[in-house]
Amino acid sequence: MNFSSKLLENAVNEVSQLPGIGKRTALRLVLHLLKQPESQTHQLSKALNSLVDEIKLCKKCHNISDVDICEICSNPSRNEEVICVVEDVRDVMAIENTAQFKGLYHVLGGKISPIEGIGPQNLTIESLVEKVKKGVVKEVIFALSSTIEGDTTNFYIFKQIEKEGIKTSTIARGIAVGDELEYADEITLGRSILNRIPFENSL
Image (cartoon, rainbow, N blue to C red; front, side, top):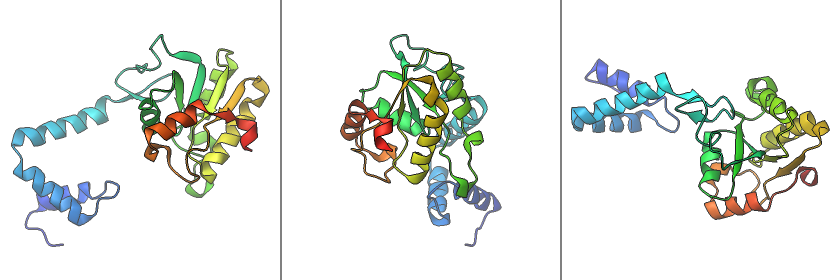
């Protein structure tokens, strides 16, 4: 792809590194930005800079937040005795959209995947185990996707907290095996949360 401008080429190269965006799509997006009022493009740039410089991870659940403790964890009406374990922030958003879950979350930041070099030490499993050992949590809901990596992660965590004697459950398999949580419709996902089953029964 020949460029008439090095600045244009650099911008296209950066945008094309985003997931699902090839060079042609990147070029179309960059040219679109050039056609917009300068103020609009500067606002986008400012928003991205603020995102990188100011975003935080909640110290309690590891969800993305603007402050040290996210709005969900700091909400006194949430049930702190129930924790829903999810892979990332997209899953928190998907479950929150169902309005069926009133507990708290724990964001792992991924799933155990030896092929990708991701082990338990790369996730926030240790802080989840510590949270359970404090004695406040009565139930842990496993809400990872129905994949081999998701099931492996669920089982690993289950073995880490098994001796604590708390209830462990997994969302009902209204979600098709192999499906990612974020793509499930809200009604199906909501019912999966409400109709969760004991984790031992899913083994």
